[in-house]
View 1 (cartoon, rainbow, N blue to C red):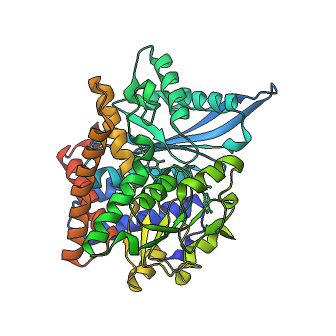
View 2 (cartoon, rainbow, N blue to C red):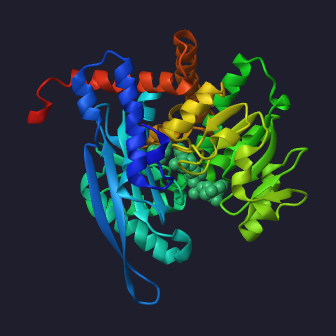
View 3 (cartoon, helix red, strand yellow):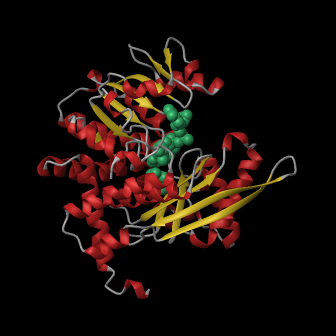
Length: 426
Ligand SMILES: NC(=O)C1=CN([C@@H]2O[C@H](COP(=O)(O)OP(=O)(O)OC[C@H]3O[C@@H](n4cnc5c(N)ncnc54)[C@H](O)[C@@H]3O)[C@@H](O)[C@H]2O)C=CC1
Ligand SMILES: O=C(O)CCC(=O)C(=O)O
């Protein structure tokens, strides 16, 4: 499907666009038509209303969703997003990408995602806690360690996950830490989870850089976003010698020819909430970052950032998708024609869900792993998956995204078929 139907931020168009990539995979691979039929829509889409008593005594009701997208490989897994523009179709699309990414890196999970349509910045801390707890009460029937395991995503973090895990424990009247991941360490969270998404993205980039026989110190990176995923990526890339020349948040992009220190930018943002408060930087509108002449454009904010209207202005040598779905499929095709490779979200941002899986395993076995254990295990899993994807792309002369999708969909299809032919009776 073309880009015409895709208006950034429009949920239905987003899902149709995502599904068109699935159609392409099934057209290219000889997989059973039953698997195609099963994967065209989510298994479950729950819409809820979350009433919240505000600090001034008034009541507000926020719409929310939890979507499970195929659970053939295991329980649904994926984050919860608090954002004013979240809608059911966006959550559905995000759950679809979760299903693919879990399969790409061999996790025993299906896809899940949640969202609440709210501007969290307009809530007090107590209102936010009531919202998080109310959301869990609303979806409690479909979640649990063997059903669906929420985690952090945009505008949610370890603190929010701690409240959600505590609420779930009250509902089931038992300790159930494996029902939520990304928790604070004191509640059974895993060491390494906070930085895992950025760390994993850097590992995938490193693998590509090694294959191309390039050196980090010769590589200039622009990073869109400066939240959990993008900040840790920028920080770790800087520490490994890459030159991070630009970063952005929703208000501005900043640029420094000689390179930025993401730790200093973080300190400036902590003071006033803006990356543009960093010293000795040039300041631009946020989207200017997308068209900078850099070696790597790392997209770590939201969906649909590069689309048919701006793809021709992209000048980067490589796109690294830290965010979910930052390119429309038409932009993807244009970049492929121009020979600009893309390290896709369903591989590049899997560090977070991999460490969430480790947290779930630790919770279920009553164990606490050292940070180095978590790191080494993540590296091993990610290196294996990324090597398979990169090798396959090179051997079959397809894009990295096609190789990753083929790897993921083959695994999901195999599980669908292994479950038997009478699934409609279950
Ligand atoms: N947190 C995690 O573990 C994972 C996150 N992701 C994905 O990474 C992306 C970012 O998530 P988080 O870092 O968790 O969210 P976050 O809420 O911590 O940060 C989001 C960042 O994006 C920035 N932003 C929003 N609109 C922007 C724009 N137009 N231009 C530039 N910056 C903009 C915000 O200012 C903020 O810095 C999302 O696509 C998310 O689904 C993917 C895998 C795991
Ligand atoms: O940690 C997780 O379970 C999922 C994180 C997430 O939402 C994502 O990978 O997009």
